[in-house]
Structure formats: C-alpha cells, structure tokens
Length: 344
Image (cartoon, rainbow, N blue to C red):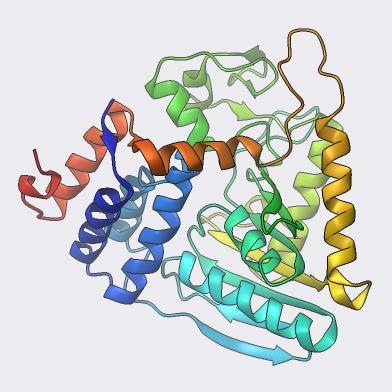
C-alpha cells in the first residue's frame, strides 16, 4: 500500500484535473477538497473519485469549465445554479453566502442545484462552524436506497452534516449518509473483497446479504437505523431536492446530481459564543468520561477518528490502497499525462 505525502497527492490530483481541461482555480479547489478527505481518512471521498469524475467529463455530465452563478439573493436566502460544473467550488461559495447572511440576519441559507457531486458534505458544515456558526448541510443524490420495508431504489445516500465550534479552537462535526453506508464505501469493500456488516444491503431479490457485489448486481441499500433513517433520508430528498428545485431521484429518469442546502445559525445571536463553546466542551468531556461498554476501548465523539487520522496522515503520509493507486494511473494515462508524474 503506497504511502503518499499530502503535497505529492495534491500535485498529482491537480495535474489530472488540469489535463481534463479544468481551469486552474477550479482544479485547485477540487484538489483541496479531495485531498483533505483523504487526509481525514474519509477515503471514500478522496482522490479515488477522480475515476468517477473523468467518466462524467467524458459523458458530458460534468462540464469542467462551467462556473456557477448566484441566481437569487433575497434577504437571508441565496440560490446558486451550478451549470453542471464541479460541485466543490459552488458548494464552498454557498457555505460562505450562508455565513454572510447569518452575520446580518442571525440565520442564513444557501442552496445549490445542477452539479454532479459536491464531495464530502462535512467540509461545508465545518466551514460554517469556523465562523462561529452552527452549520448544517444536506445533500440529495441518485437512486441507491430503498424505503424501509421496500424493495426499490428510490432515494440517494442523502448525507447530513452538522458542526459547531469548540472552546479550544477545534470543531465538533457529524457527517454521515442516511443510508446504511455510502456507495463509495461499498465500492471499497468490493475492491478489497471484504464483507459488509449485516443490515447494510439487500440483494436483488430483497434478502439481506453481506456481499457488496450483490448491491452492484441489482441490490438495494438500506436506510440507516431502519424507519428512523428512512424518515431522515426522505426529508433530505425533500429539502435538498424538491425545496431547492434540484428534483429528486424517484421523480426523474436522469441522474439528478446533488441538490444541496446549507444553513448557518449565528450562535452569538442566542448567547455569547464563548459561553456556548464552554458548555459544548463540558458536555463533550462528560461524554468522554462515560464508562465504555464491555469490549469497547473508549467512547468516541463524532469526528474523533477523522481528527486522529488527519494527525497521523499529515505526519506519516496518506495510505492509498492498491486499487486506488492503480485507478489513478489509469486516469492519468487516459488524460494524456506521462507516467513520470507518479515519480519513482
């Protein structure tokens, strides 16, 4: 398994995107988003996505030169049209617009439509929290997930992310699919020939299975947490799809891309920020002090594993599995880059 420095991975990713005819400023943002995901250990949303992005570029469903535009700003609300470009650039813009509105009105919301993929949704909740906000981000996606008790792909993985600042300058972040797993994590399990936990997918006949190949042979993702996750999944389709005008997978025949809504709440409008963050820190300390159940080493906070991975990977390098490393070689070759870009 190759260990790659952050700088090397950034250079490689940016060269691939530039070779896709992506403008330099857009390539820089997409690179930053993908590499940061790998640094945090969220490998499902890291540079391995370049394979999928190239397929979309070749199919014309990602337009690498497209630039988003703000189509409406009305008080605390902003709408962004993505024009089917890379999603990370307008998603960051939407998060900033939500923050700017919240500073003025106490709450801000910005929507984004017509992009294929915005990457790791937690990034945008984090960006809002860095500015003293309670940040919320939701995003709908293409058909993968069946309703609770059903046997038909109707919803996406439909991720939800939330973040708040802490007193020590860190952030508390929750970022998860409302399906039992993301499709990219199913792909990783298939590549590594690893079984899935129970309760993640059904096979094409509707029976529970732990073989990730069964999903790609016509099976179904389950919502996380049974009927509760199903309700979350459904409402994110409504909020990130129907409300913002992006549509949702169950009602259209083409790939809907990602419809997203970013909401920022200015914490200081409710109470002094330092008092809030002190209470957050006290709550988290109490949680960490809770006794662990038998067979469990410690009680973890949301985002704690990612923070540990980031510290280790920045120091030691980013481990890329052989499949991802090989896919990067294939993508680089397809876009006309010489083998020398990988070094020795």
